Image 1 (cartoon, one colour):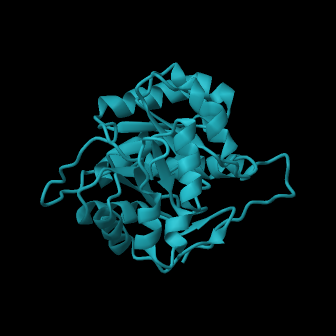
Image 2 (tube, helix red, strand yellow):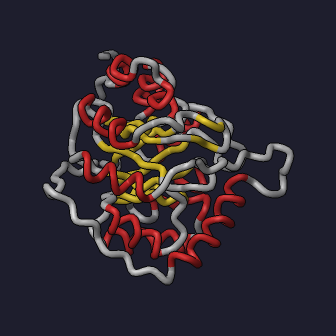
Image 3 (cartoon, one colour):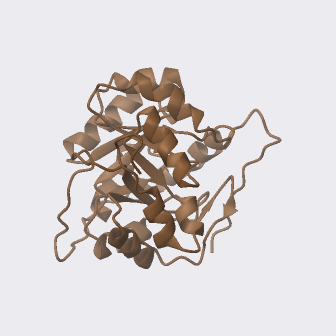
Length: 273
C-alpha cells in the first residue's frame, strides 16, 4: 500500500496544492512516452449525461481511500463493490480518485470500476497536461476535473477545449470569487464549488453559499463539493443554489451506506426532503 503524503500545516510557503502539482509534473514525464490504447468494455456502457434534468439533488459518489487532510479513510475498500453499491443506491455518477501519492488511488481503479457500472465516471485527479486526459479517456472516464487554482487561464482553456473535443464532460472546480470569474469565461456546463480550500484544506459550506449566486440562472450543473456529513448539509447547499453534490469521505466511512446515501437524496425543491 502506498503511504499517503500528509499536509504539512507548518509549511506556509509550500501549500499542499503546490506539492501535489510538483509531483504531477514528475509523473507526466513518464506518461508522455506512452500511447494509451482504449480499454474495451463489454457490454459497452450506456449512460445519461450529468447535465440531464433531475428533480433531486444529483449525487456524485466518490471512491476515496485516503486524503492529505484526513489520512487513511478506507484503504480496505473494494472499488468495484463500492461502485456497484453506489449505482444500486441511485448515484448519478461515480468519482474515482486516481492520484497515488496523496490519495492512494490508481488509474487501474477507474478501469475496474468502468467494467462494473453503467454510470458516468469522473476521473478525479490534478489535470495539468493533455496526456492525462488521454489516459483518463482510454481508461473509460467520461468526465475530468479541472481545478482552476492549479492552472493558468491558457492552461485551463487548452485542457477544457481538448477534453470537449474528445467528447468528455468537464467539471470546472472553483473555491473563491476570482476563480469563479475565470471559470465562467469558459461557459462550462458543469461547475464545482469546492468547500475545501486546497491550499489549507479547511472546509466551510459557506463557500457554496457565497459563490453559487454568481452562477445561478445560467442553466449549469452546480456541484457543491466537500463537507457534506449529514442531510442538513445537503439541504443547506441546495438552498444556496447547488443542484448536485460530490460526496466521498462520508460515504467511505459510513457504517450503513444505504441509510446515509438515502438521507442525502433530497428534492431540488426547497422545504421538501
